[in-house]
Amino acid sequence: MWLKNPAASQVISDRIEQRIMIPVEEARARILASVSPTMAETVSIAEAHGRVLAVSVQARVTQPPHDVSAMDGYAVRCADAVAGARLTVIGAAPAGHPFSGSVETGQAVRLFTGSVVPQGSDTILLQEEAQRQDDIVIPAETIRPDRHIRRQGQDFTTNQTVLESGRILTARDIGLAAAANSPWLAVHRRPRVAILATGDEIVLPGEPVPPGGIVSSNSHMLAAMIRAAGGDPILLPLSGDDSDTIRARAEAATKSDLLITIGGASVGDHDLVRSALGERGLTLDFWKIAMRPGKPLMHGQLAGTPLIGLPGNPVSAYVCALLFVLPALEVLRGLPDTPLRTQPARLVAPLRANDHRTDFMRGIITQTESGPVVESFPVQDSSMISALARANALIMRAPHAPQAAAGEIVPVLPLESTGL
Ligand SMILES: Nc1nc2c(c(=O)[nH]1)N[C@H]1C(S)=C(S)[C@@H](COP(=O)(O)OP(=O)(O)OC[C@H]3O[C@@H](n4cnc5c(N)ncnc54)[C@H](O)[C@@H]3O)O[C@H]1N2
Ligand code: MOO
Image (cartoon, rainbow, N blue to C red; front, side):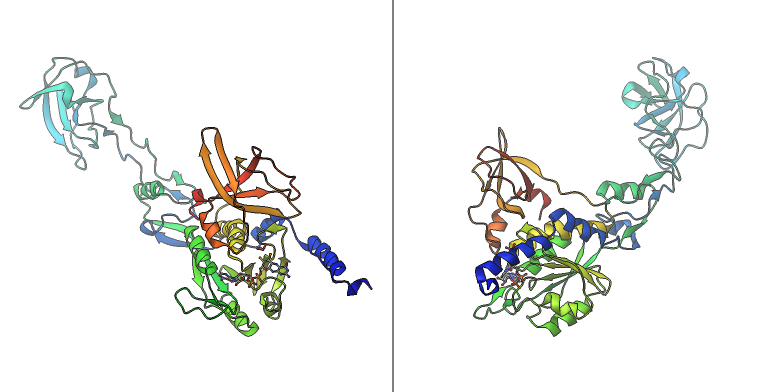
């Protein structure tokens, strides 16, 4: 009886598992399809930095508001501004105090950078290019027309769209919104991401660690990633391997934009997340992806809230968060989905042929004179958070990638540049 043969039944269950494991790109597409941008809220420009603009901004003023001088000097008529001419200074117009009269033949008005160019004048005589004697100014050289004048509206005009919706507001954008006299901006609400770490063995950092216990690193790592990527993480209290607690905590978090569970995603007797939430109407989209680390990734909806179940191993949780949670956060923030960006690097040492799962191997990328080179760590255990913290790159190995020799080019996801 083959069923009584454990080795044979293992082969069969491996085959079944391979069939239900979906490829990384499909998992990503299905997760992204389940999230949509948060509603817009109005915030002051003081709070808008880093937020995603939900409604385009139209200028409420024209900039510059009038023709203004770009330099300190004199507003004159070009026809008068010949070397040695004696022009009468009839007044001064500091910035913010326009001259009310007009510059007539043989006259000049003292101006400063940003002063409104008075009527009648058509060029600026720099103070360095003139000699001043009481109320007379004498150009040292003949001046061309139209010098050093910033034309009204050369920056932007009233009602012009100065900021398009969908952009992440930079410090420069905040400056532009202020200049356009738009002190309030409609931005997407920061997505709220609830994090539920599960497991009888885990305790909070700083707590006494009982025999067999470990400190929950994943929840804090994930919260830091979410905050860095523009979301608001909500760390729920830890839950033991107890269905009632997992259900209660998860249900309480369904007002969030995304619910993340950590651990309890695999096949062990104490991996309860799927079954516990299944009883509360979790609609499972998929469970298990063809990826290493991170095979038991789960995705579904609980009471209308998208749910991503991350595996408990810290490296698996990190890589899944990088590949699936952060892109989902981008969509929630109101940004377009950006594809995974790898860069080529040369292998320092050979790599074994890959199996059917996309592999993300921890390693170190170094810039050399002949381009970037990358070396994978000899031990790739997905529990080793110290190796993850030391790594600055993930080497991506496609399913069934053949053995790769030293010197071959492989795709790499750099980690440091993301600040994560
Ligand atoms: N028989 C099988 N066993 C396992 C399989 C399998 O296919 N068949 N898959 C393995 C893979 S791959 C992974 S990944 C893990 C994931 O399992 P779970 O998501 O159920 O995670 P746990 O069992 O709860 O924990 C795994 C590991 O991670 C530690 N952990 C859990 N939570 C945290 C946390 N918040 N911070 C730090 N570390 C955490 C936990 O103590 C375990 O050591 O399953 C394999 N097993
Ligand atoms: O794939 Mo698990 O994710 O070995 O660590």
